[in-house]
Image (tube, rainbow, N blue to C red):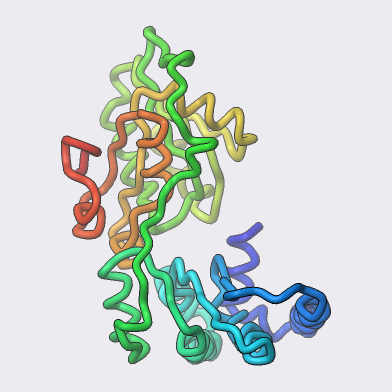
Length: 282
């Protein structure tokens, strides 16, 4: 649902009167609720809030309080990598200018890595002094070692969890499964869904893979149980700029559960983790 909303927005859905009405009514409710909120020290705009910085800046000027944005990712870069700016060039230009303006409004920008910071400073003419780097991680109240749950002894479970996205290199995982199909003990378990689901299913069918199982989204407790039963948890293997700018949460989550993690190699992940010590990079 989250991807569908972003895809529709970035591919021109913003011009739909129903969407515009939803935005207006949502922001009006936000203004009303903000007027009833007690005084605060700082406004933090979280996940993908570049566009919300415009209304946020008005509200914080009213309260004379600073505003901080957790950038997480560049909406324009994601739209570029998924071909949405080619589908709708006008929308691509609008995304660029709205994101540029939104990133200039906060008093502080939180970003994960040096390379993502460099990309945004060069693209939008931002000062490095506007950034604070905070790495991703895992919620250790949920993702933690469970020594009472062990992987099975009669087969080798390779687990991927998360969205099926171009930046995650799903085709690389399926090709790895194809290389191992002669050993029936090795089984690949996918938990999640996303825009690459149909392509993944087509690859699995075309390669006639009996060792890959798609489970879709499962509830959190089931996911934690399945990860605990994994011999290996997978990270991401994409080669897009976004995938090389960040260390995805699924990597930290696998490590937090004391599972061996295999992921794609890049300079960003090597800033924090050591090959063959913390993770195995390929």
